[in-house]
Picture 1 (cartoon, rainbow, N blue to C red):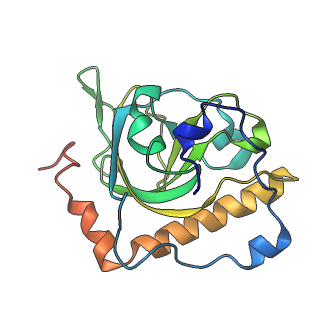
Picture 2: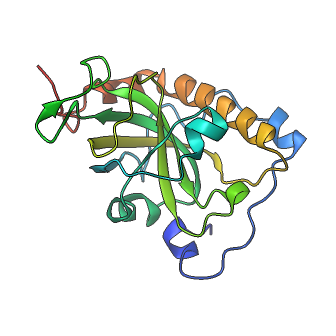
Length: 197
């Protein structure tokens, strides 16, 4: 049985497998069954935290980090790896409207849960990349996410370019996976309540 992320955090973690050319070539275009199955959907929320700042600068994939206290909802029921679903960021912070209506919509996301072996992180993180070109950062804004499926395990990489290539594939797989009717309906899930008119 595969250990959950929370179980792995209690002892010395084995090294993540290194991404190979074979694993890259054999990646499917769609991940998961035709509708979410347990433990999905998983609901996450919290104020967006500052992370390491590598996603946008190093990898061209800016991420929003969830606070540590929101991690048990997913880390206790899933393994480390890459996931897909939807997320929404509140347009307001400290009583001021700072994001546009377009940026406060429910949007597709891809999420990494783990230690980012390429960067040798010491702490478990959940980093969400919302697939939208935001005009500004949204640190401190409340974010809600519904995780609907699993794409692949956490891997290590021999180069930054190989990591970027997999991230771009993860995004495509997430969008393809979310394009199915039983996943699309989560855009209207009542859990997403920010800025709805």
